[in-house]
Length: 382
Image (tube, rainbow, N blue to C red; front, side, top):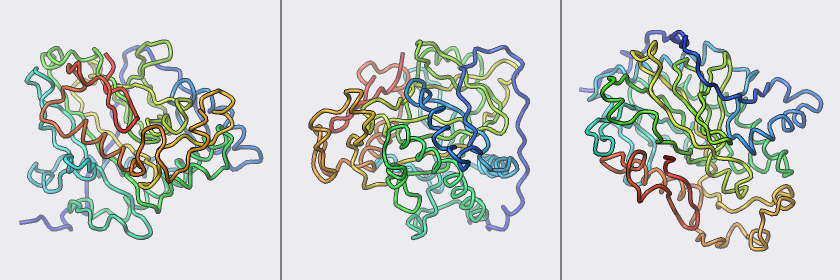
């Protein structure tokens, strides 16, 4: 029998663990204070500050976003409560990876290559709450339904306070009309956007040796932007322009942002989709369950993935004559008219997740890249 929704009204508060005391090689990421955005000349100032990070690093941190930390911790608490549910309850609404559907629960059932070690990641992906209620038929667990009003409010606040501003700043950097990218990522339009609760469970030292923890396994993200809230367990690393792995340091009150594959496609590589990975925690955090709270920004489902008409890209010599003449309703660079953001995302999700073994990330030499209708990305770095 389903557990009554009222059972989930009161959930334990989650608090961040202590940061590691280990001296790590931290990546020097640019911090952008979004409080400046609405001041006179603020957008232009922030765009100038962000330009190098977008073009050369692909990762940065935003502060001054106006989302109180108690609201962030509340979302962590909901996610933590979900992962502590019995497995049979979590299994009720799984992701349908066969069709590239990312909404729902992902159970750690796959093994890593030929090691025999199972993945240690669980996740729950929650779609947007659009004005037309486009995702009302996506089934949700009782614990999510019990807190849906505050989850929906968090979704919208995060988009308005952070995503909206970043898309405008990116348009300014590319010398496009300010709303060019925002219109193509409209919150109330159908897209593959989702809020994610995620947890990495602890591994034994022997398991970490078997999977060669810290030896490759890097990837890029599928959509436009990824937002990651600080949770204090060190593990995220980025591949720097100098081809070194460096840790991403938690920033109090900050959100770590990275640009992803679709923005790289739209800008012919001008905006960087950076390879990154998660490695096992330091000895003083090895016993912890690494809880994650993320938001993944995707373009509207019907947006064709063709280069944007940016003067910056033209001056950089990135736009071909074919690119300049591209009509969003016609094929370009081998893409068919149906090669939309939705097509790309679902194909990518199915490629990565619809398999019994996570061989892509660890050992399959034939799948270092993923190709789809003229688009190509790195499946893993090694």
